[in-house]
Length: 181
Length: 261
Picture (cartoon, rainbow over the protein chains, first blue to last red):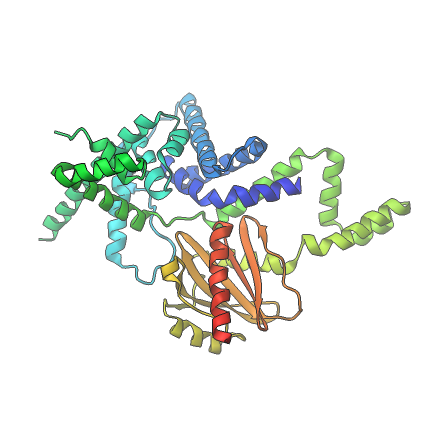
């Protein structure tokens, strides 16, 4: 039993940060994200013996995604009404660097906050492929596994996400420039 | 109007095309203004996302919570008898096992615990993991913030008992971000802090008190790599992958060999 735990820690837990980041983008609140990651890690541990192959990260993130969907279904059954999208945009996800950065400047932090809000404003299916591709550096096949859609759909969602982010990013920056003047 | 090749241009950028198609797209984007602009755009988007949003790691409190949940999961799964034996072994002093039971079995169990205990609960390893986790709490990571080894190294001279090797390996992906003093094994130990991607790597160093160096191990999801240089013991702690942690260890070892010769 201890041995299984050791193997789990050595193989799966190096991807805990990726699972956490993914959960933060999927969840509505940091507390939801915490619960989601914990549930996913426990499920991963229970199913650890069934893990074949080396793609542990995609496997773990798939579990995160599935746990997220299960939680959503439960909320819907309990008649949970999701907050309007605008609320998410206002709050952002605050996925901003928390590690100390000697060169960090407030300008950079502002930029990060803007980008964070723009990301939050994307539709969930677009946001998740963008996060998996750009932050977690997964290839199309892995993203298709995690999101459970065909590769072609991954490609079109990714293209839409990138285009939307780019357009909004430019609009935002122009807006700020005008505001300063 | 969107160019019909735009999805293939994106796939090219993401490294998903074979060499032949890649060459095809390179030629195409050389002549198609729309696709060359698209390449620039997604390159910029990627740079901004990785620069601003990439660095987020699991909060130490959550990691600890998950570890406790795993502990409970394991204990709940065990048959009752075995569970009692394990929790008993953890909680009760060994001599209770040895003297409360009757006959050889109990004594053997007690002895087994006595022999196993140091391996199961090496306080040094726990100290290192705790120190690492503590360092990740807000405002605990760094006493001297600098990416310059000529600032970090002299700082240790005044604040710790040791003078470890300090170097910036930014080129190789391990950025020196500062230093910290810590206390364990009855010494003022030096900690050099590196950042590798989104991960913090703490490199602890203290004067060797015994000849042996602990074996590399993984505890609570953190990897600990040990080595010894001269009369200093080093331990690099992080939640990066093993390969990445050992990459830094090799760089530091090479650096010490060079300094010595």
